Image (cartoon, rainbow, N blue to C red):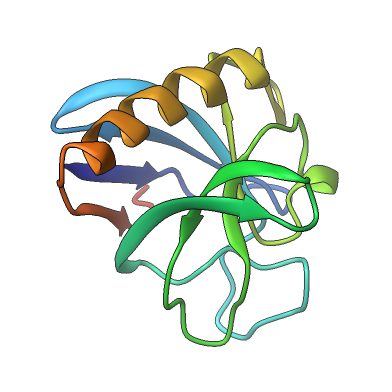
Length: 135
């Protein structure tokens, strides 16, 4: 399974995007600012292609999708949340956008997690390609 995250340009330290799975729109995303240099808990992961798995998050105490092998970052997850205050470098998902926030995040996460779990259980390799924002 191929996930594609198409980022919008960062505005006011907020980076919105759209996530698709095998070319089908799944949800909106929200991340920290895209920066040339990393600021801990305030920077989106670099554009590129990464493997994705689902495993237990110590922080959230539940199974969540994790983005693997991100240079200079650890514990990057897809998870629920509404604003950049909730991201800490992770990727928030939502069913709709609302200004500098995403909404219906838990519903979007549950739907995403279902399709990822099905793909992984079927032996598929899941990759995430993050496309840089364009104006």
